[in-house]
Amino acid sequence: MNKFAGLLIVVSSFLTAQQQMSLQDCENAFQQNNLQLLAEQYSISMADADILQAKIWELPQMSGYINAYNPEDKRFLDAGRAKGFEVTQLIYMGGKKKNEIAFAKSNKELAQLQFSQLLVELRTQLHTNYYNLYYEKLKLENIDKQLGYMNDLLKAYKVQSAKGNVSLKDEVRLQSIVIQLKNDKVGINKNLLEFEQNLKVLTGITENIEPEISADEAKQLLKEQPFGDSEDLKRKALENNADYLFILKMIDNSKLYAQWQKSLNVPDLNIGAEYDQASGTFNNEINLKVGIPIPLWKSNRGNVARAKFAISQNEKNAEFQKLNLETKVESAFQIWKTQFEQLSEIRTADLNNLDLVYEGMLKNFRNGNVSLIEFTDFMESYRQTALQIYDMKNELMESAIRLNQLVQTKIFY
View 1: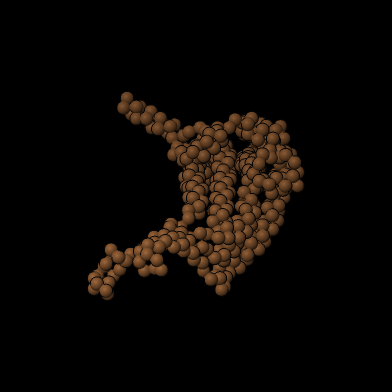
View 2: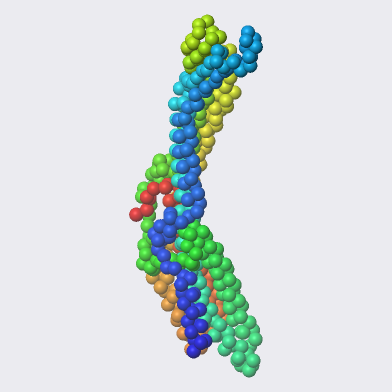
């Protein structure tokens, strides 16, 4: 009874370690729990703090004096007869504060675009790993099905080989297929572990995720086609791709920086008031004070020149990014189109026939209607074909995900 209870606990813990989730469920967990996204959001908050800081003016300065030594009365620190103080405030000229604030706001827009870049990249990883996991599990089911039969068959042949009823050559032939199937299974399990770990990191969910997709949903996804042709996709990518928009915003940002640096060449005013008790022309006089640097040269000309070069650099980067993005979209579209057409040529009836032939081959071999050589040749061909079909489906999904990443708008029905 205790052993049975222990077995139930083990089975229960295994089941709870698996969590069935749709792609939308994974999306929701990803947006709530992904640590990289949560960390990147602080960049936007820091940019807000920079805007706040840019709006702050220099503090007013206050200074004063008292007499240190009165030579007439020979008294030290004679504050009763000689003292004064002044208050001054720095006044920014040439639109410095306005330009600094505009540059800080532009930096926030860059931070928001960087967040969008990260969001798109991580979402692409989420979708890719989700469908990779789904198709690897289908491959594992197929391999397990073949292994179940081939292991039983190999055991039977080993018994008959020991009795001398079948040749050792036939046993080895079967053994080679079993070894290949087990090798396939090792590779698939390794991939499954990698995809499961990636999904855990992306979603923040500690349990293994079981993709919740019906066979009909999977078929429908493979039939989807993008809106428009490659030229439409290029246009949409230029309008929505966060990487490209970031480069364009960098041009505006560098222009604002150059404008701010240029305004720093304009001298600022120091304006204030001064009270003097007895050392001035009049007793208890109040004076207006104005100070301004003498603009004998442009003190910030090096930064201005550097800012101009940054504008030219970002403009060239934008030209490159535009060409690069259009080329990537065209390439991704052609890859998707080729894979879609190849998979479309494999009809559902052909796949059903493949399974029917597989079942028929097993039955005929059991009945002795098929030789071992014919059977093993078919099993090897079936193993390769089954895995290739799953890979073709997965690669088509990856191509669609890649297009989504580049265009970053709804492009599939």
